[in-house]
Image (cartoon, rainbow, N blue to C red):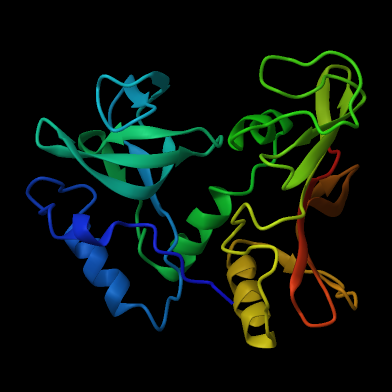
Length: 275
């Protein structure tokens, strides 16, 4: 199973020094990743946050590229790559926001999260940068969102259908998302990944998992407050609990569907209706 994904450009590690990039110390990050390779087998995105106000996000690592958004002081981002391009001596950084928006930000305006290189924080970064719970986020977080042939009605500009039951395709028919609209607000939403086009929490459809992989994933989910649900013969399920109608109930679910050879057939996540 391919749990280790190389997200930082190896050549870039030698180019940036702590002087040029003090907040996100690339050299230290590279050394820590090598040191912790066996004990923390996650080359996940690294958690960081914006340290200034009105910081521009760009579609490419330069000031001439399209403006795609703005970050404010304290906004969460997940760093996935350093560019060779610099601005005022600082490299550009590829990021995903907590809302799923992707772009480039100059490293001058970012700080690493506390304990960003620990096992818990690295797992949290990859999970939260690939799993989005609000329906609006789902529609915007994946490239190439299009209709999948099961929809009716008119589309919105962001690519999803505004109906009681709505579906969107993710990318090249890699899966679909659907939600339920209650009084203009989406109360329930689900994503189902059916092909290997997307990495989700470090997993891909087609990966083969063994018991050790499941135990490791379970420990990391529990560290984030999730519980391992009842295990079906063909699925592993995790739930995050909350309060629903005065009682404790699942408010989010994350499911991995396996075939008889323990290969991942589907990856699903769902946000349940809750007021």
